[in-house]
Length: 174
Ligand SMILES: Nc1ncnc2c1ncn2[C@@H]1O[C@H](COP(=O)(O)OP(=O)(O)OP(=O)(O)O)[C@@H](O)[C@H]1O
Ligand SMILES: [Mg+2]
Picture (spheres, rainbow, N blue to C red):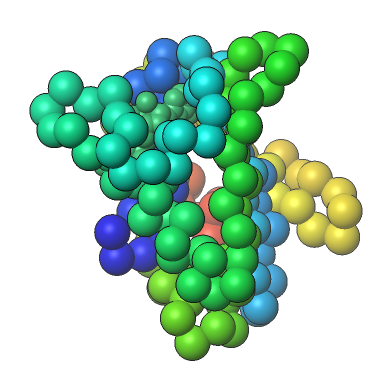
């Protein structure tokens, strides 16, 4: 995985594979770091062994590399990756921080494109994207809301990819 956009796609794919239909993504992005928190309502994890490359629920091969590779990438910049079970819902929460000024930081890649890809990849997924800034959270994108607007004819389906990319670029400064 060459950049953070690839990692983000992998994390969301993990959520969908775990049966999640609701995902909340929160991002804080400054010149010096990229922080991301993702929580889902999937079947959850048992423990930290998911950070081990040989733990996977894949049927096609016996190693799962998404999380171990992201952990390595963020720790290479003195950042961190945490993953835990959400007690109330049984879903999964994950947080990571990457220091962008570190010489080993991976590029962000095209994150806005990842969000539009996710919109089309999983038409049932209710994703809410928030920006965190100065300790306040702002809702930037709500996929279910967008789908309703498309259905009602308030938004044009052919422009939706562009819309998602523009909003996320502007709001997240990516
Ligand atoms: N959000 C999640 N909810 C429940 N289980 C998860 C979640 N994320 C990861 N897991 C579990 O952790 C395992 C390891 O995830 P990881 O992304 O490292 O590898 P993978 O998805 O199995 O394979 P790869 O990412 O290489 O395609 C998964 O197979 C799954 O069992
Ligand atoms: Mg994965």
